Length: 207
Image 1 (cartoon, helix red, strand yellow):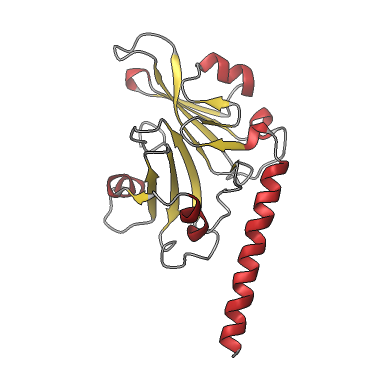
Image 2: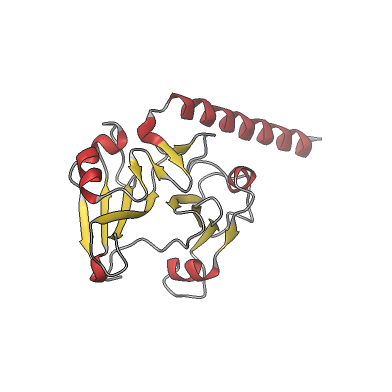
């Protein structure tokens, strides 16, 4: 009987947290909304570098790679509607050149967030459990190649990457999320990319 009661109260608590996350999402401004396949907040896929800077201001960090690639990070300012964040909360934007021949402007190709400030319209953020996220995105599948890269090219997995290419969204989970699907704290990042394309690992180009 005690086991049944404990399980019941854990389920009620999980449902309550899920409901609160949806209410919180409804109260967030446009800067916080994750839209799969389109963008995050005011940053849209295909947007030019100067447009992003005009909207968010200068990034905290920036790294340039070969072939016109650019990776920039914001930790404060308009990206978070001026709200104070902790040291792990980031908005990361990956740019490439507009044209295949590396000509043209730098445009947004992929966006990654590690802050619970950002949520989908239905309330999904990094604070949700594995089961809650899978429930909202049932086509998510583990990508072994990206998982291997995220784990430092080691067979022992530290992080697993689940991707829904149809909708253009991916989630990074710490190892063990699928084994404890109702426990929160395993999701560490959310990616948005063009539907029907392949996401990439976002880190400094010398890593």
